Image 1 (cartoon, rainbow, N blue to C red):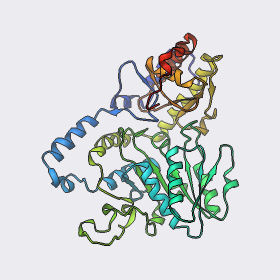
Image 2: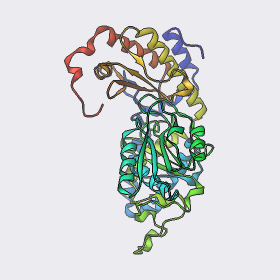
Image 3: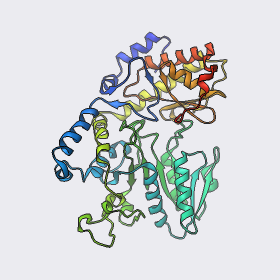
Image 4: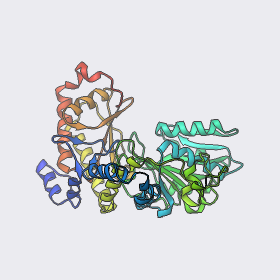
Length: 414
């Protein structure tokens, strides 16, 4: 795609965008350019009605009968089957439940049991903190295990040896948006005799994910970012079919039992992916996700990726042209094939700048110590929005408004 030279060029691209109609599926405030869908996706228009239906009809009238009649009990599996195409998995390899943190603990524990005699878990020093914390907790609570860190710029081969049991990596770096080569790195881990766990929170819904084709062993992901499932929506876990029979995870709750309503005193894991369930699913939280998955069932991920690459490239080009001389540094890879659907900028006063930009209707977010993050979500973002966002960013920088004391006040969530 030729880089648009004017805002009118961007508007023309929007007219011919095959994804343009998808914007109507979401509730977006007037005057707001939302570049934070990589943190929390917006509300699908159909979600409110779906929640009302679940609460008023399925719960209000169906009561306990809805565990059967409305399919509540099977939701973790039925929704998992709907997410499976988005991550390149089989329908019976994904289950929707719990949080990303809990699911990582489960799949990591299962993976460790599949590699007896090995005691090291490799994870990235700059990875999303919950992954670091869960790996630290899992290895420190089980005798004989240890965590080894992979640092930025370090080759994975440097930390792989015959004691490594599992490697845990993020598919897209949450700070810079760097996209890792899932196929190559998974193969590298397997050649070392270890198992591979991918965190796809920052890639699912943003680009094609091919867990099956890449031979991935286990994966975890969330549904509230690009999948627009809502704040606190349940996460998902992936376990390749070849591991399901032997996989044992330690949170042996009753929903993961082979016969939960037998109420036996001993635990017997359910067959297949169901053994990764634990307790009662958050049924109300599933409702918005169902509405979002209705949208995703009509989306071509190839088109999503193509538009994502075009928008992030446009943003990079415009920032370089319009915001030069103000101390911004592009922290994301310049090669679009090496980044997800995110562009990050560095600035010593990044927090103040992002706060001033939000006040002007462009919502991004900040990651300590100096990172401004902008997520590009092709289903509802327009090329003209990208143009306007950079114009407002330039105005914030040129005016110096970000230096005002009020923009330095720390917020709980950044």
